Image (cartoon, rainbow, N blue to C red; front, top):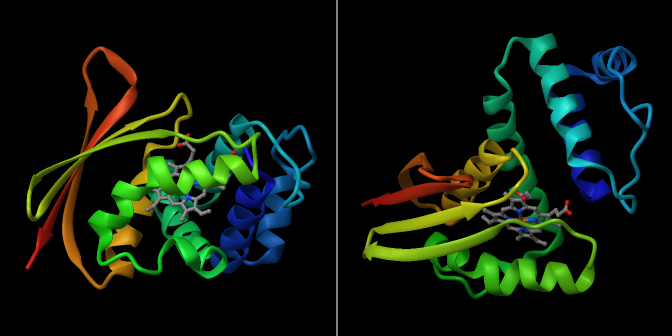
Length: 180
Ligand code: HEM
């Protein structure tokens, strides 16, 4: 997993809990890199999961909620640093439909070692997008947060539900219903 993701997670934690708490939590967690990450490095996703768990234990906020919050944080980061992917999109559905074959495809060209999920999207109705998220990494909450933040970014409102897909442990179905 790209170092940027780790750097942003620690920035979010600093913003929420303060620098001293972040140092304390990292010092007390067994991490392969001693909790030192650079944006250009690449680290196992299991380390990210460990960090989220450590902050969950410290704060009492569930790992899922922390992942969702991190998804929001990361979408803001992407919108600031990769604004070209957002311009020209008329709404969240268009953006979400572009992740797999446009956005992440470009990311893969820029960073061949990036570990990216797959998405299949289907418009069930004008206001209903169904998305199948597939990844071997346990980042469903993170994905949920990215989707929520994407809807907000386009000044829209939606109810978003998710459910696991039977017989496919690596996939989750998201249903996004836009509210008028
Ligand atoms: C709402 C839109 C987006 C969604 C739902 C989404 C979803 C995700 C998810 C869930 C992951 C974690 C990896 C996994 O689950 O296997 C991920 C990773 C990533 N995404 Fe996206 N993404 C979105 C937009 C973007 C944009 C705009 C960029 C801009 C460059 C981007 C770049 C990346 C990068 C660099 C990673 C990390 C890859 C790695 O660590 O190796 N994504 N994305």
